[in-house]
Length: 140
Ligand SMILES: [Zn+2]
Image 1 (cartoon, rainbow, N blue to C red):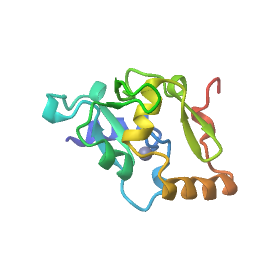
Image 2: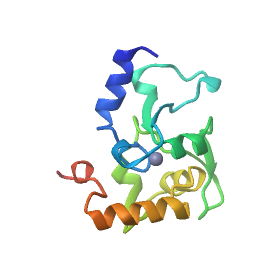
Image 3: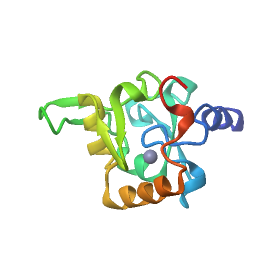
Image 4: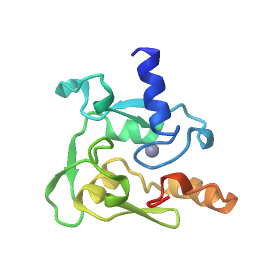
């Protein structure tokens, strides 16, 4: 992937995971550029199909496009950072990410965003006063 495209993705995301909002600054593991629709499914390497993802979100997401909504048990597509508004699908309850919609719930489940280690790490960031990020809250 060319450097200009990589820079665009990093800048657009403000160096935060576009799924769980973790900042690269607060993660030891390097963030990755996610093909929202994986190359395996003919997803293009173009700005409209790329998102910045933390190591864990990207690993758990893999080439998945969908999952099973834990509430309705129906197949639901995953959150698409370029097409969906983050705040329409998710909100924070302390260190726990809560899905507002089937897409939100399913994405949290497939990407294991509420893994106990992630919750513990977010709790520490909350206590430091650096999480959740202010600049991505609605209306600011
Ligand atoms: Zn993440």
